Length: 199
Image (cartoon, rainbow, N blue to C red; front, side, top):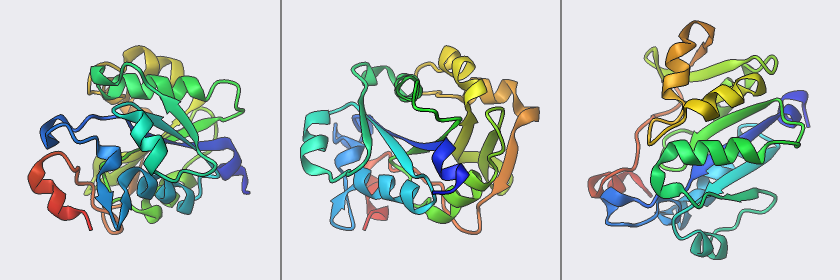
């Protein structure tokens, strides 16, 4: 395990209930014959995250029963209905005491983002002060790496479905952007029409 793999933990946000998908939890959507959460956790590992924490919410019992997530730390977010901000707070809280110096955050509903983008963002890690974001044609996207020095500030401002957006906007000058548009597509699986993007 390299230094980056040991000090940076992959943090997968997979708690959403799929409100615009008729209440189908995104973690349980089928992709390549397996639950989408399984695919997304595997991408973090392939990209170089030796440790992965997965935040679950909607139908977490079903996700635990159906998805194979060996070696992952499963984190329940009982407040998942409040939005992505609550999942980000739960995920960051789960890293306390693990020795992690950064979290590389990805979203379960972005299957167009593969291990190449994860590896590029991971390579931008330098210290607990690091803020690194994938960029697509220069526009910030996921995955995003948060050094532990930023966790308290992010948790304090993560609200609703905005996640870390407010914190990142306030610290724009400190973010290292890593272009990933040549290796990944940052679309979301949000609506029934988007389901066609799954395999």
